[in-house]
Length: 230
Image 1 (cartoon, helix red, strand yellow):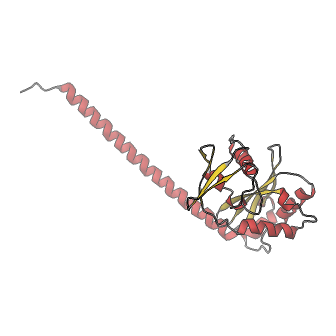
Image 2: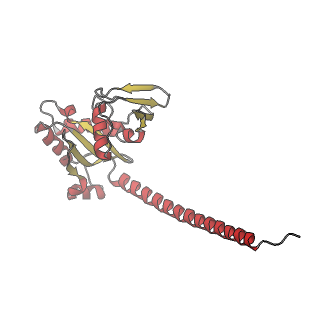
Image 3: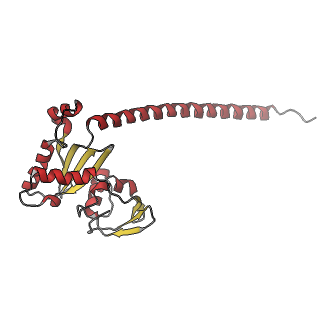
């Protein structure tokens, strides 16, 4: 009978204990993670329900982005307490707060060039980029702006995009963040990349082209100076 090796036994015992400790730790970590996921889901559903009930189809904020990469906030819904309370108690009459539209009119009449980044809620939190050039008609009114905004906010782009890349890099999620901007000769690719770079502190080449793939596996190439119409 071979001699019993105490050292081997201790090694196996230690390994067994370590494995048990790691498994228990993994179990606890997974359990805690699942709790946090459930809490997040409940919070997220409550947030969405709250905004659907009180702020659906509402403009939440407007930022003006000039040609020097400076961003200036020109409107926030909660800084207009009367209208904010009307939304909370469902007393609002107009689809959009007139103050938000007046701010856009003021930018247009000042003859500034640049882009508007509009945060709004339409069953979910959404963003659109609007080139101020789209409003460059003579004597543009609040009603004209209201009609243009409705077109971008209420009517979804129909094309289903599954992949977007630039210079071999996947930018699908960043690009689709502004999906309803891509119609009516509103923004060029260089405008979109300009905003993406500012908001995400990225350095995508704004003079590059992108390749877009839809759900039918059709591929489209957009040069930097071409309007994006999906």
